[in-house]
Image (cartoon, rainbow, N blue to C red; front, side, top):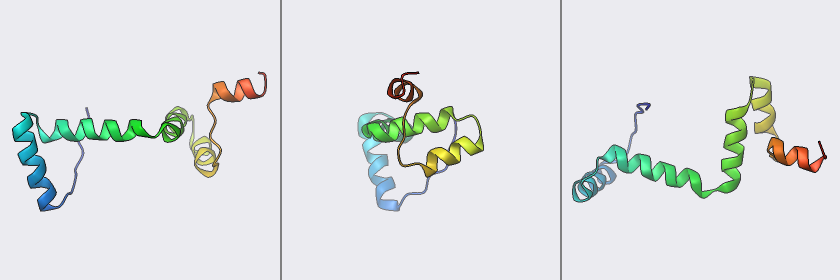
Amino acid sequence: MHRISLTIDEALYEEARAFSFLEKNSISKIIRESLSEYLSKNREKKVQTKLLLEANDEKEILEIIKNDDFSSNENFKKKFNL
């Protein structure tokens, strides 16, 4: 696991603290679950994220970011019969 620093306003913190007390879960667990749910919502961004994580070098990353038309390797191969 990685540790991150997070800044939120006082009201949101107090609400999260009360919620975590009622749920008997840590604020960290609630944030992890919320972030996971948020990241899984957008299927197109999930594909883009996977491509970025699989990129081999900075040049490939820049091409992925620059290009609005993302395609997985498998989809590319199918499209061009490779």
